[in-house]
Length: 120
Image 1 (tube, rainbow, N blue to C red):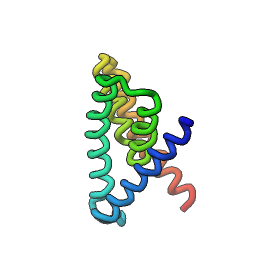
Image 2 (cartoon, rainbow, N blue to C red):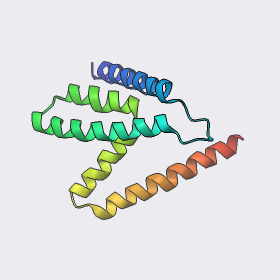
Image 3 (cartoon, rainbow, N blue to C red):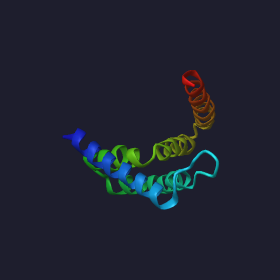
Image 4 (cartoon, rainbow, N blue to C red):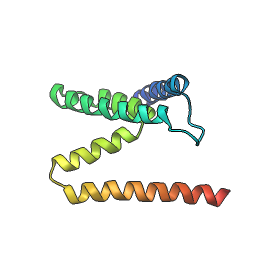
């Protein structure tokens, strides 16, 4: 049953992301990617609010799967990355947090470029 909640949330999140692209336009690689930027910052704000609510209200596993893994996972994964970084910092894991930040950006961008140029 948990799979169903992830699928429902993920589909809804993906649809919301698509609607944001329809409203703000999709980047063509020549201009600032407003829709992706807006989705990512909104997702970060939402995951912060919702994470606090989930802890405070003791959300069920089902609800956390629907909202975090499903909806926000379909909407943006940058929000999860941001929350994980914040949680590491909150838990005084500063070195690990900045290692995660640096490696995620450097390795992620590097592999994106590698994959692109391997196929091109």
